Length: 250
Ligand code: PGA
Image (tube, rainbow, N blue to C red; front, side, top):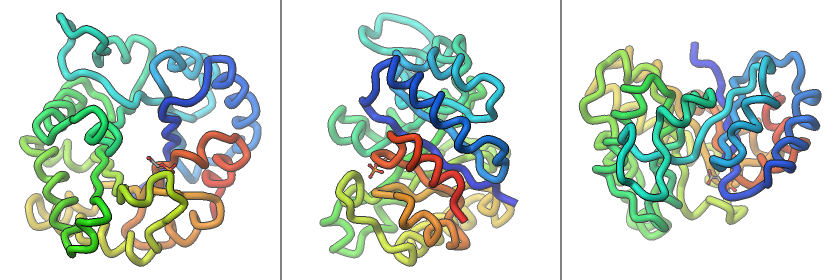
């Protein structure tokens, strides 16, 4: 059984004070729920705030980026041991905003996945296609190419714990959601690509999220799809009310 996992991606939003206020409003709204693994991925400066505010709540927290070397002359970067020192367990890797704006390529993303596993952290690997690629019928080949390149060299045991977020770029922050059926079709194909390379048992353990304009109005239909195990949420994760409604989806 794959546990549903819903992750807030706060991107570059919220001050420390706002992060703290969010947690104080959010935690009572979801108290007692155990159905969903809930995680908040915040900018670096808020991670220690989350460490203290979320302590004992069962809600995890993660970083949105890191550099895959323990230490060194890498001005402006943050390493995994530095994140682990404050209790970070999850890391987003390969988000389309990092691929596009910060020119992260498949080789760096592969190094990051390797580094995350070596450090015992939980990677959330993002893949997704441009609208033009979708229109050309390349969605599955683009996304499976990104995914299989990122996981190169992982063991079967590591593969089983992987989380992959399928985020069509044209659906991020645009209000345009892939239909639940479209998302299921792509994610089903990605699971099949893993089955072909690593076997059905491994493929059945991998958790797939959909991301791109997920909101309280569409979460239930997405989560009802057999291959969709969760959501990676930007805009709708910024307010305690809407993020709690996502966690408590029916
Ligand atoms: P969105 O962002 O929910 O605001 O579309 C999703 C993401 O980029 O992870």
